[in-house]
Image (tube, rainbow, N blue to C red):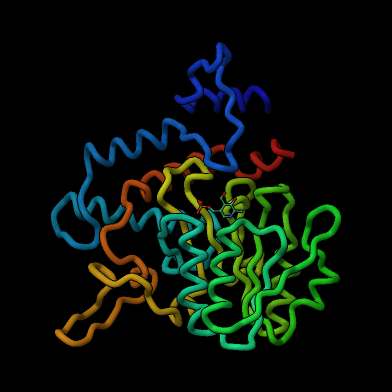
Length: 306
Ligand SMILES: Cc1ncc(COP(=O)(O)O)c(C=O)c1O
């Protein structure tokens, strides 16, 4: 196993340098991971061979770029076991994905007096958007207690998540403590009370096989750059009916279906959320990163970590 991992080191060109007279050892992967040459080359190839805007041209390059853009959507769906690629929305990253859920789903479905439940161990991007939502609509933000190990305390959670709860938002794995939360049980508690569960997978997706259906999640967000892909690309997965119920947040090219002088209609999800020219090179890089991780094997990665 160790030998195998040493071979992977050679795939990361940035590690081939000395810092302070020592071979570079990079341990800041929770902040952002380094990129293997397969990801870098996929982006270079894309620009050297296929670069064009997606979904708006009928020439050869536009067709190639669009085909890659949509093939990665399917690749992501398979990677997290989403039922459909049409439930995969490209975002800038976890932060944008969580903000979109709070802004769009939250503003529509959370009312004054309702409750939003998060844990005491959330990243700012899974805390502040809910604080802001609570302030906008007059809802109450409540916190799940932790055990002494730093995990969400399930016994206490049963008293915190009630029929007043509309959204439970919790990380799958903590960026501070590394603990993995009992998402399945929290999802059951949320659903029993008529709430949805939003999972911050920023530190989950890079570290273990992800199955959004087995988790029982309603929304799942992660960032490409923490799993070997470029910065500026991330994913929001949501159940089809929830994405359909959400209004788009950015209006412009590509997300519209029909435009008249005084009104417009919008495409269905996921395209209705993807206004304007997208981070196509980021999507291509994300596809290459997923190929790389699949080749190594997420099950091997989690075993090596343990
Ligand atoms: C648990 C967790 N959630 C969310 C984020 C935000 O990710 P991004 O900055 O890529 O949007 C991070 C980043 O460190 C994180 O660790």
